[in-house]
Length: 368
Image (cartoon, rainbow, N blue to C red; front, side):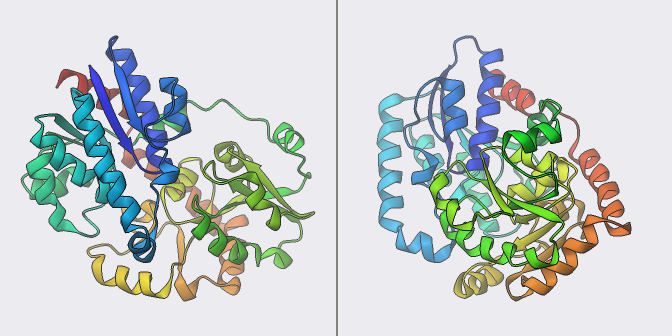
């Protein structure tokens, strides 16, 4: 079959690439055309129609400023879809864009599969109506999402979380060798995951690095995002602040703890069993708008949302400051708070189910 896949962010690129691998195992005649990133490119062997770097706009203000570009991309995607006429359109999260494309694809009688639900349970619940109208198969990765869609008379299949697949496939790592390979010192590592977009990285790194004077026995290592050039990070590097590009999982597994910008990375860090502090700050206007439209959730990190209680500390807006960062980071480097968090991570993995999400999703897509 001919598969047209749209992933608009780095996390979508990861999950879509694993889904593509599973589709290739189950469909010997699989052909791909896709919007995504380097991981999807590695599976397909050719470049995407559009790279997610051209698509990822964060926050209400940034979306408003880039509205013309977004609308131009939507128009182009519709024309490309019409020209290529795939058997299946697979949408990966990225709802503002993908729901518009779902409606158009339905008008062309193209089968529409949504893999990895938008967070409609948090905000814009009214978009469920579009899912009901324009999506043929809904494949969800969080256990409570199946019940959410059932409440809205939408059948959804819980396939498990694909991060468990990605993490279970990792080879063992030698921490000493990793430090040597990346010119790090022998000190324990505190990993910094400031995000993947220049706007948020700039905002978060200065705050994260402000804790350095309190942790002189540790080295700080920034996890570089594939969407940003290495040169961008050089302004932050010194004798005790290092930078590792495109090796986030390896870096985390060699770390004692991590400071993580809210997003998929909070869940990745927990599943890799690394104690963390979750950090979030946006512009005042974006945050105030967000507070008014986000409903029904008490937390911002996927870890806490899934467990429905505070496993990891979330420092948000004015609460994200040097004093609080130092306090919370100290509490997870040693002692009871650290041990409790590690125990809670075990329960989190159990709740998400076992590995096999990508294969199960591919099965459902291929069998139709």
